[in-house]
Length: 93
Image 1: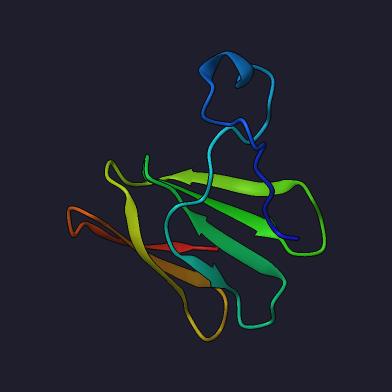
Image 2: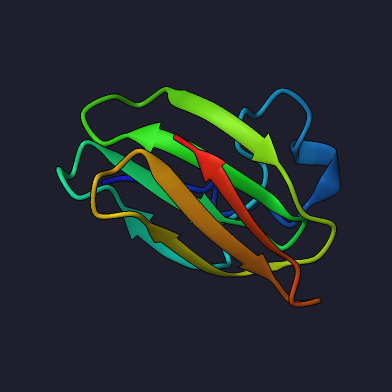
């Protein structure tokens, strides 16, 4: 399992102290070698996680609108993301 969300995540009083209070609602992309996954969120965050570990590798707050598209370059060194306002970013992995 790559991502797990508490079943009661919509209750704000229960979000304190929980490390992943939001659910991935945007696109999901894998690196070509399958070692990392990119998860897009409604708040514009992109989380990069290793597929063989439960810890988050890094969080990128690059957008102001929900992430609608994400892709990883064939070499696996660059990522492309686009949000609902059509803002596009290319960033190093």
